[in-house]
Structures are given as structure tokens and as C-alpha cells.
Length: 287
Length: 320
Image (tube, rainbow over all chains, first blue to last red; front, side, top):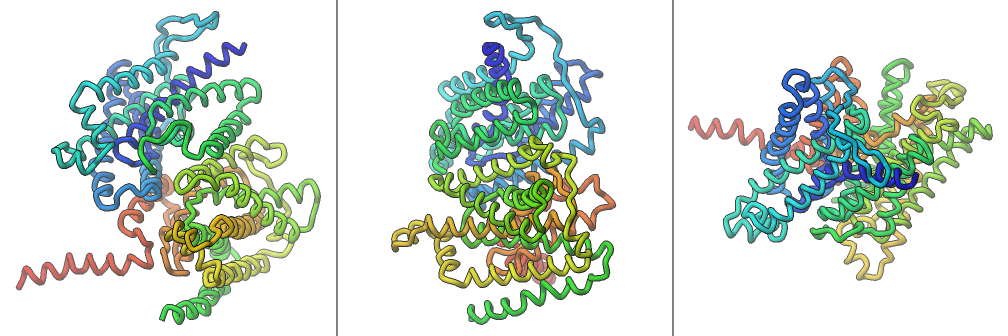
């Protein structure tokens, strides 16, 4: 029983960790705590869902991914980059602005897509047995993707020029500009990748639960807050706290039922924030 | 010069606040919306006091407001206490919540504290939904309100008068020693500490006052609308309350009035295109933050001047 709870928790945590990684990645490089990641991810999933029956699964998912990436890239390039140039990293300012972006996008989602509730059914690949607990492989993919992205980012940071330019930009902005890194392009690229991670998170959220604009907002709150609790900008801390929160969600849902589940979740998040005022792991930027 | 301005505003402000209230005292739609406006002006002054005066980033306004409102609901449904006592207890409990919140997050500074209060704003509606046998949850709960028992016109006048008193109180408070110390803390906390001020105490007072007024506003709110549900006090309410002083003004006492006018009248004006209201709200957040960083009162003049110079003077120069 406990084992099953833990397995379910890790599945939920894996899904949660994707938007969390998006938030943390964007913060680490650009210094903006972006609120709108999961809402734009939800928009992308609605695009996927609309195209699903006509073009098939893989192209539909790619289209959704591309939509989120392009939206994220565009928002960063044309709205946030000029603002960073003018006003620096004012967290309150960007909190309200990205909240505004999320509001606009969720309003657009409601207007463009007439159907309010969608649920994604990935094709069944098979069942996996983890210590006698049967798990759908399609649900485990999320945590696999999360770990793969984590690994890929480390490899990119170590081996490629693009990855090194991220690290450089997050460590010393002025110096990176001086040595000729196109800082704004790096910002936009990372932002697009963050939003794409948000899309994958929202997609698997739609596999686990029904996806509506409102549950998209829930994912948005969770992604944002868990990233803060993990130590803002620290991708690993974000993933760890997402997994912990997944297990909390799983057990609270089992013992207390749906209504109290989210109460317990948010109380625990608040408690962590009170006990460790700067997050579980150290933030990779000084706030 | 500055002192003179302040005195003028102290005399003018209650007149500006009370007079329009008397104009719409005809019942019906105009009075109903104006009542809402006054209730949001109260919350707007709380946000202005805490964010611009004391420099605390707090996003939990809907939580303190909800505590005031739901205290009234619970006291009436289960203990049948008189409404005035309900409102007072609601305000006190809400002040207590704000103080406990500050005590628990006092170790963290700035943005993390703001995020903890944002969590409080997310938590509150979920808690109310989980406690639905007591609070009515998402579908809401009705109470025997003062609005019905006193008559809507009388209760409306009570709301207007209390708003005016609160605004006078806030404007008085900003001119006292405590208010000036708040300004110092918001501008440079280290400096305030270095000259021997106990910033912890002054910030605690700021939270206590803000919680008290916010809870009072929430209690008045539930007696005005006769019912309340978890949807009324969700995160969006909190962000719009936080937005009121940002839109209004950084310095002027009139700022929250302007901000509340926008927050309340905007959905009413655009009720014919309700489908797009969310998008318009979001755009308003973005545009105000970009173009009016010090608020409408402080920046509108400058912005118009800039546009005038850009558009008209450039043409003239080109023609010459």
C-alpha cells in the first residue's frame, strides 16, 4: 500500500517537476521568475488536442511543443527582454507582468478552444511492474523525460557552446556581453525551452487528470511555488521538491480525499517556506 | 510646501469620498456598484499602506479579507451573535492572522516573504472549499446581513462613512512617527536598523493594522453582498487588490481611489464583451506595469507630455 502510494507520488512528482524545471531554468539564466509557464503549456496542449484526430499523435504533440516554444521565445524576445534592459530584475514587476501574460493566454485559450475539458489518452505501450505495483509505461514517461532533460542540460552546459553561454550569462551578465555572447538570444532560447518543458508537464497533467483552463492554473501555481520552495533557480532543488510534493499529493489524496489534498499540499509548502526561508537548496542567484 | 499639500488632502479626501456616495443614494444598480467601489477602496488602502508605505510585499489580501468575512458567517450560523460584534471579531481575528503570518516569515526578507503570502492567498479558498459543511465552499453561503436588516440605503451610508473614517485614519497614520518610520523602512531597512530602530516591531504593527482594516473590509463585504463563496476570494481577487495601489499612485493618497475605480468599473463597463474581459485585464496589468511604473496619477501627465512631444512637436520641427 505504502509502496503504491510512493510510486503514484513519484509519477505525479515527475509531471510536476517539468514546469518547475521550466521556471527554475528561466530564472537561473534570465533572472525573471516567470509565472506564465504552465498556462502557455496548457495552450499548447489544447493545440495538440485539436490536431490530434486529423494529423495523428506525434505531429500533434510536435505542433503543441512548437507552439509553446515559439510563444515563449516571442514573449521573451519582444516583451521581457526590452523590459530587462530598461528596468533590471525587479521581481515584483515581473511577477505582475507574467501574471498578466498568464491571464491573457488563459483568456485566449477559453475563446479559441470551445471545449473546456480535455483528457489526453496516450497509446498504451505496456505495463511496468515496480516492486509488484503495476504502472502504465505512458505515465512513467514524464519522470523519464524530466531526468533526461536534467541530464541533457548538464551535458549541454559542459560540452557545447550554447550551454556554456547559458552558464556564463547567469553568472555574469556584463562580462558575457563583453565577450560577445548574444545575451538576448540566449534569454529567448532558454525561455522557449522553459515554456516547452511547461508544455510537456501540462500534457502529462492531462494524462493523469482532466486538463481544463482552471487545472492549468493549478499547475501554474504549483510549478511556480515549488520552484520557489526548491530554492529559486536551482533546477535540482526544484526537481527534488517536486518529487516530495508528488508523494505528499499521493498520500494526502489517499488518506484525506480530494478536498483536503490541496489544503495539505499548500500548508506543507508554506511550512517549508517558513522553516527554510531561502528554499530547500541554495538559490543559484542572489535574490 | 509638502506639509501644506498633505493638509489639503486630509480635508479634501473625505469630501471626495463621501460626496459621490450621496449622489447615487437612489437605490438600484448605481448604488450597488458604488458600494462595491467603497469596499474595494478599503482594500486598496490596505495594499497601499503595506506595499508603498511599509515596503512589505504581501499578496495575501484575499486571505485576510476572507477571514473577516467568514468569521461573520460562522459566528452568525453557529453562535447567533449580533452583527456589530461579528464584524469586530472578524477584524481582530484577521489582524491576528496577519501578525502570526508576519511572525512566522519574519526571518525571510523581500520576495520570499511575498511568495509565502501568495501561498496564503492560494491556500485560503482551498481551505474554505474543504470546510464546505461550515463555509458553503464553492457554491457559497447566505447570511442574514445588515444590508437586509438595516435597509440597503442605511447600510450603504454606513459603508461610505466607515470608508471615509478608515481613509482618514490611514492618512493620519502616515503622518505620525510610526508612519514616517515605515517610509524609512521601505526605503532603507538597514539604515533604519543602524540608527537603533526596532524594525521588527514597526513591521509587526504595519501587518497588524493592515490585517485589521482588511478584515473589517471583508466583514463589511459579506454583510453588503449577503453571501460569499470561495470564488469571491480567490487568487485573482488578491492580485487585483495588490494591483489597486500600483495602478493608482506611488505617493498620492488618492491613488487607491483611482485604482479601485478601475478594478470595479472595468468589468461593469465591458460587461457586453464579457468573453474578452480576462484578456483585457491581463493586458491592463502588463501595460500599466510597463508604462505607468509610478501609477496613473504620477505618470499619466508625464506620459501624455512625452506623447505630445513625440507626435506634435516632431511634426512641427519637420515642417519647419
